[in-house]
Image 1 (spheres, rainbow, N blue to C red):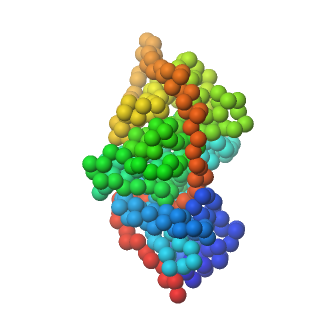
Image 2: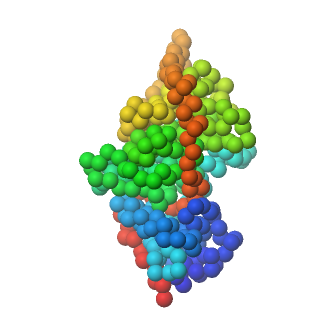
Image 3: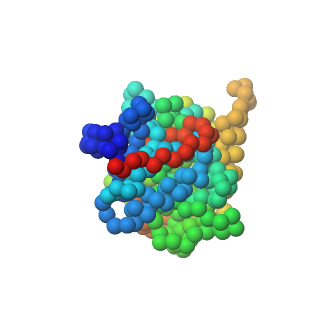
Length: 343
């Protein structure tokens, strides 16, 4: 504990990187010079402590370049502490919703980030030692490292399941705007629930709009609802982010938008798997069309029933709130988990 006190200047408010439902994240420097992010649990009931322990268990099973890497932990203190590698460039949400003149996310960067997140989720669902459901995918839980590579973070509410298990029956938990409406109605979380949340992130990357905007009109309050309605009415290019319009090729933008519609399907069985999503996004990135083509042919926008779309607006969930975790895993190297001295 003394090591982490010193590393964070006694958890100074000047070292705070972010705050969320589970705790506060501080920037610190270890005695060997490594810059780290330290997440300190809130002093509350045992539920949050359980989420910290759950995050340790989950992350110890994961080894992927686009998943935040846990370096160590300290559980014998008044509140648990988790230590991650430091992520230099903060959250994807910051860059989507608070762009600045010095740096903006180009279309190619957005597409690459989407591919990296999809690949990480595909790994969690089908390539980890046991299938893992993230359960809180959102742009504020996607971090960007020094090269703006995506790192999926915040595994406090994640769950691992047996290979033959198709869903988890749990108390509804998630973030408003990203929560799968089918999960809200049934309390059954499946791998397709993560797919829905990823679909909302795709819509954010395309439009630059927030998942929920309480100040907007009712039809625009939920991005998922507004995006689906716009797609149904062939108004995609009326709602795109200006940077996407500036940089992107129309056929690629349309292909990603159609994929987002499939991810946001109200019937989970009709959504693609994350593996299928990752493969399709990689195909879109690699597709090259000669500039001399006589005419660009855009895919037909898939329509969804307006009555079904409106069901999204009725979904209400308990929000965990944004929680910015520090950490990075830029390679597949396996590193031992460190347990910090509490003396």
